[in-house]
Amino acid sequence: MRQVLFLDLVDEAEAIARYEAWHAPGAVPAAVVESIRAAGIRDMEIHRTGNRLVMIMETGPDFDPARKAAADAVDPQVQAWESLMDQFQLPLPWCSGSKWTPASRIFSLQEQP
Image 1 (cartoon, rainbow, N blue to C red):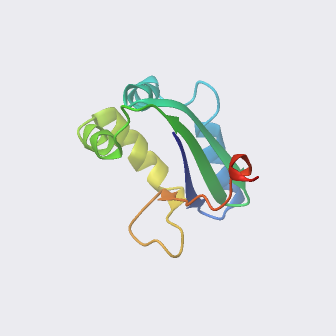
Image 2: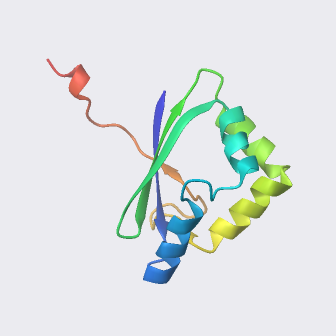
């Protein structure tokens, strides 16, 4: 299943550059990558335009966001990563209290006649 989520970054060139550096190949801590894979996330990409990010996740049938959140909450390495990322990330203006905000699909070429 494909999931698409959005998030804003602090709109400062230096902060955005640091955020991107933390997401370069090999820069994300191995424990964080393993927690993503263990949750049933088969693939994940993050794209940026300006200070807005879009995350595209391909999840397997065993993926449960609540179970992933519960596992992350008790994993000190994931929590350290989340705390580090908090200095860069901002919720979308219309979504208070939530970091990554799910998007609703409104068009699919495959569903068109």
